[in-house]
Amino acid sequence: MSQHQHCLASIRSHYPQFSVTEKKIADYILENPNEIIHSTINGLAEDLGVADSTVFRFCKRIGFKGYQAMKIALASEIVTGLKDIHERIDEGDTAQTIATKVFRSNIKTIEDTLMVVDEKRLMKAVDMMSTARSIEFFGSGGSGVIALDAYHKFIRTGLRVHAASDSHIQLMTASQMTSDDCAVFISHSGSTKDILQLLDIVKETGAKTICITNFAKSPLSQRVDTPLFTVSEETDYRSEALSSRIAQLTLIDALYVNLMMRRETEGQDALRKMRKAISVKRL
Image 1: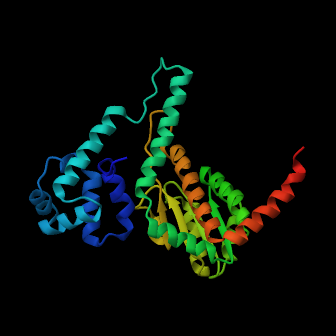
Image 2 (image 1 turned 180 degrees about the vertical axis):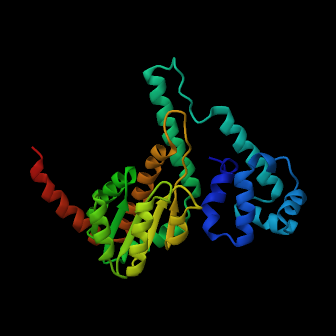
Image 3 (image 1 turned 45 degrees about the horizontal axis):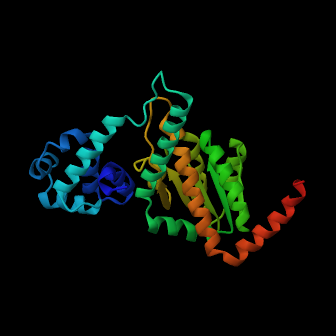
């Protein structure tokens, strides 16, 4: 997929690393995309009280050659979004058509997320997990199911991993973590009260922190050591939180495979033992 379709996603994914001035420009573009495509670089700079060169550097920072290139990209992104409204379901659609639209929607979510995956942050997360004494996955509601899926995968690495679904046990587990441990927080909005409460407790223990979330401006993403982002759009038949779980699962798969490659011998030993253990369940 071409970069021009991912201007807004690129801004969101870079957001935590922006300076105060860059965040000012980013906020304006995210909140007023339609106005941007009709404005000049001078006009935008004047509205925000910054130099033209500052706006130009911002455009370069998010992956474009200049302001005009970013503007064309933004226009294309907005028009595309209005044109297909992200797979609208019509009353007369057959079961096959609906299934096709759902599949396409999920494929788009994964492709959009791939465009904002930051390799440095991804590898930093792998480093943190591979050297941790134990890894704890935290999530509530729908994200709790994703946390359990992560536990189901990562138990194959041979590392000590855990995920509790009960909120009280999550709080107790968080309080017992140490600076040798790693906590992975999964939250679509990044602003869930339960998750932020857990983060407060984990931060007090000195444990390393990672999050998987959809909003770069969320309290969660700005407070963890390493934020990882998904991109999903709301449709007329489901919320973006439901769509994002596909991207969350895929991002967790990417972490898992990278970790298994890093722990080649230990990982294979753990996998062999596990396969032997569960073989008794098969006929």
